[in-house]
Length: 279
Image (cartoon, rainbow, N blue to C red):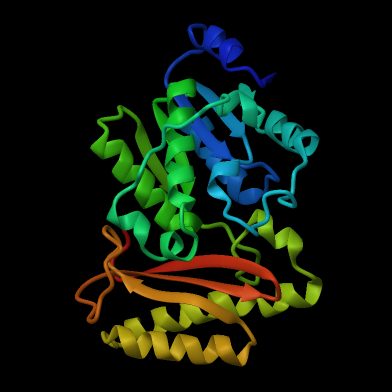
């Protein structure tokens, strides 16, 4: 595996990399969720490139940019074992040159949910992903369903800006008990990891209600909130939305995306589940 932190060096490599190139953008602290994306890219593409970059532009004031888990040595070992061809691990001043003042403003979909709870978050996400697309020049890029809104925002950006990149979404990877894998799980104590299982339990409850015929989104959200409150989880939002546009639904016709964010202790976690026909 070739490791580089230089845009110039990576671009010199590009002409020698067999296509198609599959790209997995990450913020490091890799886990099985990330590795499932790497394996999908390895299956589909002749070259696999992974980036590790903790993007300061998507963290708001008081968020965990400085404490976000970082372990580039461990990440490199894992990626080597998975047969990754190139690890791109730039410093912040490589991605954002002095005086950087150009940003991608994502549209209405990015103003809801995570966008409302974390103002400026998706501006930072969309900008860095487009910059990475321009640097890496991939044919396909791979994202996880756990970050459902992020994936939809990026897919919409790729469509609106006429990017010739396939956006692939892979299922959420969970612990045997159901907790969605996340780098932020690193913050949880053992007791909090047990408590956090209520997030997925509430999503499973939503699916069970839907499968049994419930179509009123407010009823589903009320049952979810009751379960989460009983578990001591402070919810940031619970949403029952159109799975393509993220517009809130009052009644579920055929399918929906249920998304939530909540605090387990001081740690904010997100998760989601699809209702109805699977895409």
